Amino acid sequence: MQGMFANRWWIVFGSVLGLIVGNVTILQFSASVLMKPIMAEFGWNRGMVSAAVMFGSVCAALATPIAGKLMDRHGIKPITLGAITLFALAIASMSLAPAVPAVFLGMFAVVGVFSAGQAPLPYAKAIAAAFDRRRGLAMGLAMTGVGLGAGLVPRLTQLYLDRFGWREAYVAVGMTVFIVAFLAVAMFIGNAGGAPRTAPSNARAQASTGLEAREALRTSQFWKLAVVFLCIPIVANGTITHLVPLLTDRGIPAERAVAAFSAIGVSLIVGRLLCGFLLDRFFGPYVAIAFVALPAIGVLTLLASNDAALTTVGAVLVGLGLGAEVDLIAYLQSRYFGLRAFGQIYGYLFAVFTVGSGVGPFVMGAAYDATGSYRPALTGFVVLLACASLLLLRLPRRYPFPVVSLGTERVQQNSSPAGIA
Image (cartoon, rainbow, N blue to C red; front, top):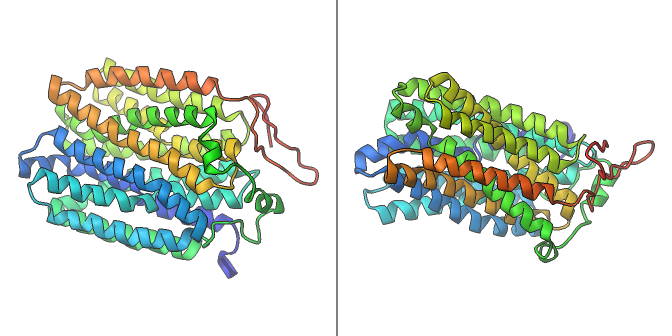
């Protein structure tokens, strides 16, 4: 990056733009808006459409570590630009989907595979290499793109749906992804993802330190984090993907349901900013526990009340949790495993997260089809969040790769909950 875009904060700006149309917002949020029209045309139940989302998420999970390894080896820009192009084409091709379950699943699988390169992975990798002391804040700011996408993508998809129908809506969504994400990466994200010239020298030095991927996989910390980042998206994505059907089942008009759904975007933004701010000041696993408790309260609210206002509040609390986990993956990974194989290790953890993102909606859909209610799934979600909190408490109290500050700045060892860089 040169000239007017040489400052490292442009990487954050580009990440915000790219993540507005990242794979999380496109696969999950547009699917929620288009679910009922697809069901109506094909005569399918909710479990079938939810299974397609899950299948696409599983394929994205399998492809994410490969994308991360390719970015570690060949740089961010060439891999990501190619993936964005193929992802956009795959989305647009969904307009040709026939009423054949196997074909529909296969087409959604292709969307999932190419979405791996338009996930938070390339943006998190670029930011982790460019920032050290303010890494949490930079991650939090960048990941607000997902929150903006959660607010904009459902409304935009609904607009496309109302104007063109669900098939043409997929074409319009694909074009939107290509235009926004391709320009964001081409203009603002460096090729190698390494720290730019304006980054502090300690950030550049840290970019070459850390565990190899195979070494990280042998640690208990990796598997604890993996289970945590499986549980959280099962709950958050499962609840949010089915939010519009859940609200309309309770007699709320579709327009109000989509508006409530879009309100989650605000909570996503708040969650990411707050999480990033806190990660630079407090012990990361404790911050993570706080953002597990919030969606737990949200799910309990959805279980306890059918009131439209309280249901919206519950959904917003769930969104606060969804607004933090991507930041937490990147930050905690960089502190426990370093940056040497950031792309590949992040790929493994984000693959687990992606599986959870697909399993959650499927569990919600299957529970509804089996019982006529979302209550059994929501009850199980509370148990999953309790398990995630216990695992976070068992993470080491000292980061192997803490913030290394130069000059008069202190070194953050984070051996206590209140360590400050």
